[in-house]
Image (cartoon, rainbow, N blue to C red; front, top):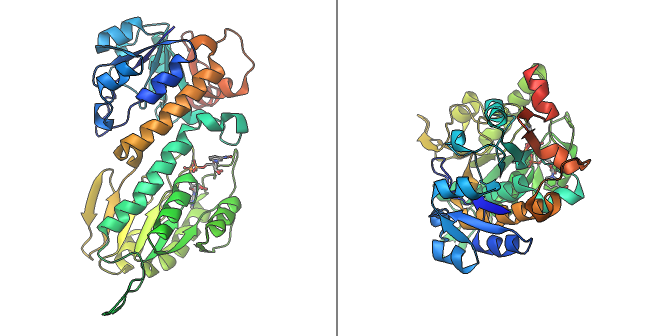
Length: 369
Ligand code: NAD
């Protein structure tokens, strides 16, 4: 079996699916590894590093031609070039982009998407790329917000007096939010967290941060939040519009699987914030007027940063963790690099998007009908 590693084609994407260390680990499972020329360049992993770990290096066509399994972080631009019979593994976001799943099925590609992994199953945790990447993103969110903020995060005691610590609010306390809370606290900010899930509020408290309390608990399935109905969402937005202007820095990380990220910081909230405040939208769509990969300053002097793909900006840590997730998946689900013909494996059933020319994932088939 040959496992191919493709260079990422998405704009601003600096990660790579396998690091040289990942090559060493993969080869222990008995497979050949073929890495596309320059695949790790933006994450500071060179072709000679991969070769030293035992990988072959080749052009894109060679990787497509010779690989049984193809590894990516995000879907490649040239899916049309994927030969039938290949297994494509990545964060393919099939619930966000069902058309891609359809295209892959029509081409006879078997696709496995790491973002469909059952999160709460302990066996799946070493493969949990959403967690590893959210962890990196949450860390970077706190750093980026601190950099954009015109004051100190910590209280500093100097001969000229004492500085006021920054008041930071983190909305959404899943993996990314909890890491943003921990990182902002390490920088010395006074941090408050908020989430709709009761478990997440307990997690916030366990970090030592304050918990912003607003009534309602909205737990959904599989450890995820559910989308709020219109009334609930309106009530939440009103309460947050009162709370948000008290803070210097707001980091939002709220998502609902397969749905649109909820709006948590309204136009009115932005207008009521003090000039110099910073709002960073990691959830994508949590903040009125935020756009991906942009930094704007409102008329009232509030900096709004749209940053839905921060893991891609910390490529060494993110690629290292992702590679481990992928190796764990292959070791667990594909003995000798091959998918079993028949399988009752619940993890495999959860991540398999399409196989033998058909979309097989139940949630995707639900979407189509
Ligand atoms: P996510 O990225 O889907 O969402 C981020 C956070 O936003 C979640 O905490 C969610 O509750 C919150 N949110 C959604 N709508 C909101 C709203 N309207 N207002 C405020 N907050 C809102 O979540 P995630 O970080 O991927 O985590 C998903 C689940 O996976 C969690 O239960 C997490 O604990 C679980 N998980 C478990 C393990 C484990 O068992 N070891 C590991 C990783 C993740």
